[in-house]
Amino acid sequence: MTGTVLRGLHAAVLTGALVLASGAAFAAEKPIKLGVLEDQSGDFAVATIGKVHAIQLAADEINKAGGIMGRPLELVVYDTQSDNTRYQEFMRRVLQRDKADAVFAGFSSASREAYRPIVDQLNGLAFYNNQYEGGVCDGHMIVTGAVPEQQFSTLIPWMMEKYGKKVYTLAADYNFGQISAEWVRNIVKQHGGEMAGEEFIPLGVSQFSQSIQNIQKAKPDFVVTLLVGTAQASYYEQAASANVNLPMASSVNVGQGYEHKRFKPPSLKDMYVTTNYIEEIDSPQSKAFLAKFKAKFPNEPYVNQEAENSYLAVYLYKQMVERAKSTNRDEIRKVIAQGDVCMDAPEGKVCIDPKSQHMSHTIYLAHVNADHSIDFPKVWPDIKPYWLGEAGCDLTKKDPMAQYTPSNPPPK
Image: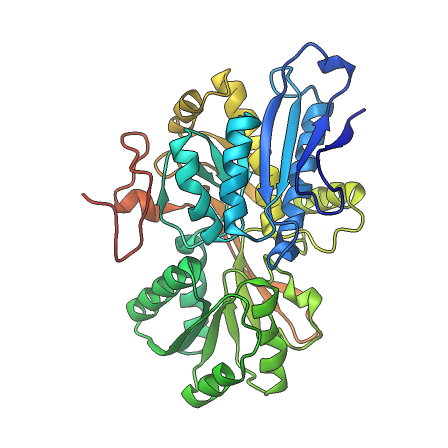
């Protein structure tokens, strides 16, 4: 029987380490340690507590099935509290003191970029299991979340064809929002559209009266909402109260913060989201995953795409270690370079691209109805993370440990 031991922490806050202990069968085997650095409190916690639970679920299943190469998984979990300085502090601690073999870390792109230089410096291996703005070409990072060429290259043309070519972007004012908005801007231009407006909102802002007035004055055909955190989510009810009544497109909302469940209908009416997983997906694989999740965590309010990404990341790591017969990062990268690290996930088949160490996805277009139910007008199977590789990132040959953007691609 797998048990849970809390050591050196206040259990309600989870600021220290949570250890997934193993049974007597593992007594003689050295554990494989997985660091888990996620926001269990703070502005992003709504979207990220499920990531911790998903990793616990996968580790529990793997341990009950005999572990990895006969070794138990031990989770060392820190609550980063939506605070980038804590990411830096805990990343050093989990790699240097706790000696984690791999780390699963981070929600916001700002947090990732806060800890990534430390992972590089200490020659660690980190999984970033979040949807994000793309562009990280770093052999120390494996990314299981979706990226712009999977989300915006599908979403924006579909929206322009259905609703019109005049687009307004409302985005969080940090690297995720800025770079995502650049992708939107470029795709709109490529498809003959125009930007009616573009605003960047500081994290923590919860009042949107001026932005709503700006949108109403600009008269776009739809609004791209790239808002992050519980404060910025206030926009939806405020926009509904002001009768903005415009279709919305997003790569982050619903799939992360399940706003359609948290806010009263019809504030999310006609939002369209490209996501690789949400719990409404009606497939046998999704239903089986959801049933396992709810059985272990019956009070989980919603199982989002980040939870699925985190769950499958543990199984992908298991496959890599078993094929490499080692937890050594260089040996694991040799396995990734073979180009066939794949698994049948709750969303469908996924594979790790050897050039970028990002993951292919099934992309679901989720539409929020007036009653906040979900339907899926379109599904794009097996969308590969092609941009970085095409732009010049090839981690099988060179590791620049850098992040690139469409306006700042890898040097040729």
